[in-house]
Length: 297
Image 1 (cartoon, helix red, strand yellow):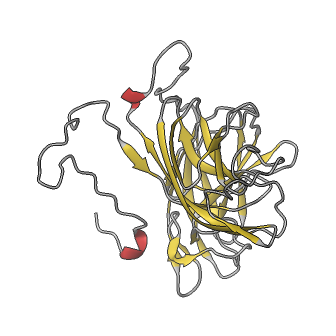
Image 2 (tube, one colour):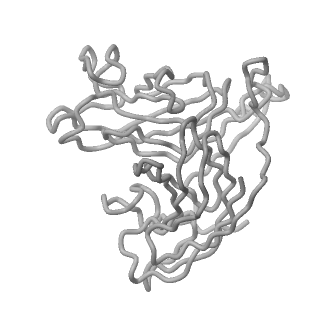
Image 3 (cartoon, one colour):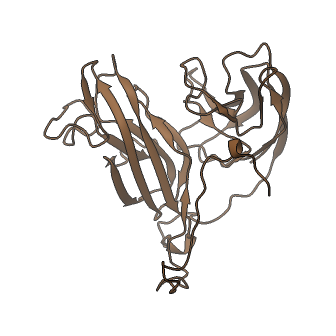
């Protein structure tokens, strides 16, 4: 496979040998962790939790590392570790450092929150999408973001199997399929697909679009043109990328997530709504072309 430099976001080389070529002791162990690295995300101090497109399974090991600086209340700067010794009684985790990075799995209000700080490794206690937020209540006058990297162990043999493990490790059946054309000149396209809780989608997109006379893009986005302005649906990702959101029954909308050329998002408990696909661009009039998107569920 040949790739242009602009198409490569990260290169990860996994080896089963140490520097002197001796085998790693557990290289043949089927339970040896198989780490999958996900694209980095930028987490800001906002009212909504940042929803990633990382679906975790109960029993999975997860590693998170973060960097960057956020300004709280327009005056106090902090890194992902938060302000040592300072607490915010109204923050999501009032007993942890004010302004630190916090995670949770799923939308269950009773789900335990996890303090991440600069780095943490934990085992998922449930199935669900991974969310992040900043451990601070007041969102006004906040600036900056934390750059967050996530790795998850995809070795299913390490996932516990028992009476409470549900359908962990099982691939949901694909009973329906629909092909949708997403034009580059339209911000959002209604797929006509109504979503229900715990629904897994398999989305595959292909095609090329013109963002202007100078730039083209695939569904993964053009990394030479990074969306850094608030007018883009999804900041920090390539212009022209295929993105998605859910419009809930009460009129609210989820945060925008990256789909790219392939993704397998899963809805959460209590999520009912309509799936919309869009183009990560803030000026659509000079665009040309469309993406062909196949959706199975």
